[in-house]
Image (cartoon, rainbow, N blue to C red; front, side, top):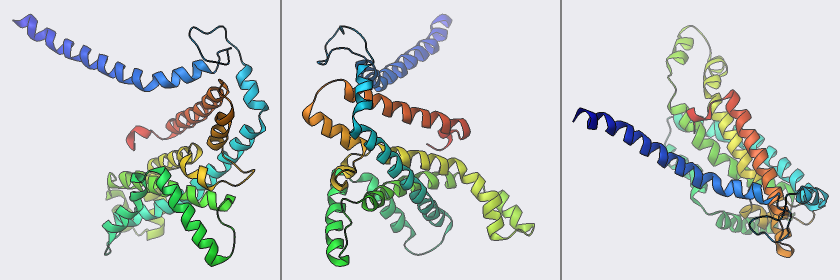
Length: 274
């Protein structure tokens, strides 16, 4: 009887570990398949591969559209994070610390884009840009400025969500102590509040950059001629060719995002916020 009782916890732990391992396998199997496919030598993918090669990475590098798309995606994602994160951080601080009428409604409005499908959001922004062009008599759609503005709208909801979560878990005792010792509101914010908000802000910047860098739905409807992002360049390539070149480009994307997450987690533990 005693042996049965002592065996059950180990059996439960083993089953739990097996389920966790299965979950990780389901999550990472597609990623591993993409990376492996990028090294297949044959143009039409088949198993087992006839050989391994770097040719598809060279082919992607020689394609000017991929290089232009990568540069554009990096520029747009960086601008979206630089502009959107401060705006979202200020909004999150007002929602959590402020006391004003309609605070919950504003919070819901700012988080609503997270629940809207990307295609719907892109179509809505496109129609809004068309109406704005008629009123302002200037080009907005198919411009870099219009694309960056749309990606800023992607960054703000993620920033509000993550920074609000970070602020709600903060202990205000240190802020109150600093205020009691004579520190002004700006000094308290700069020396106490802002450092405590850093994990949420860094996580928001990372997620905003990634969302913008990999976005296809909105970018597809708003890019202009000769100024396409990397996901749009990949879709254009797929329209005329089917080979592992796209797997090579996707592997580079995975590498960029992975390095970004590892570096970010090195300075700010994302598990505390996300």
